[in-house]
Image (cartoon, rainbow, N blue to C red; front, side, top):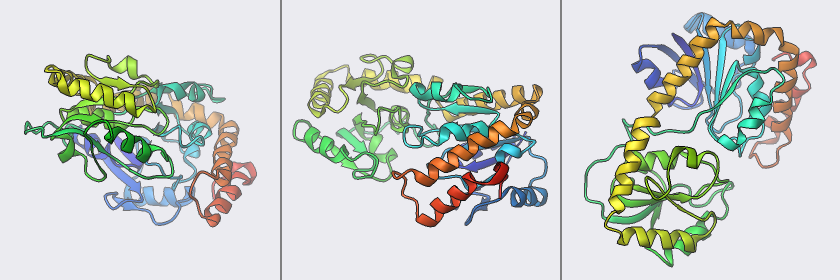
Length: 341
């Protein structure tokens, strides 16, 4: 299969290792074509004609960015999207109408995507680990409890206070940056989310061989894992409860059993290769059912939904967008007939 990958490149090496031809477009250095400005539908067509004619599938993987490539809803090619951070980006809901199928990482948000005026399918697809990077180095675990992530940010403003309160009750090494070398030395990895989401850290820490201590939350946590068996949980937003669970686990001679069970679970069910297979199997089925033709037959409806997404981007005050970019998205929202620029 010939796959045009947009935005995040995590799946690109996996698709290639599975024997598929991939061209990646995005804003980061590892992309085959690095974008420095928005790409119109016409310019996308010109690029494809020169570099990658007749792709079988366009795959958009959420990289926590606004759209850089426009007119996807008008493509005769199969389009598939995968949203990671629905809780931060409500514009993903109408934007998903541009795709022939849409994967959603947070289970509690799935009904928002299944209720689509174009009736395109939406699926829950939890996040994952990457065993090529996230692996147990079988070394001494000399860090009792660790946290690796953003310590101060616009999305999770209570994190530092939570970590400070935890540290007053239990040992904690907290840092940002590369997580693998820290998780490989940790007995317990403390996870704290922005909005009760199942984030990448759960899967990554388990694959690195640590016991995961995370919030007892929704979004499918109990569908994937069993608290007290392959994961530990605490009351969301309660650092005292988190510290209590951590100290009890550190004193438990069976603490390493939680870690081993968690690692077995993610490597058996939650790797990036397994997610890639699901995406590609879905793509093959949709191609066989002529899904792009069905989308194009509903183009006026699809255009209206995509324009809603652009309007949301223009007015969402929680997004750190410059005024010029907001004006651009407002112009796209008001574009007559929803025609891409």
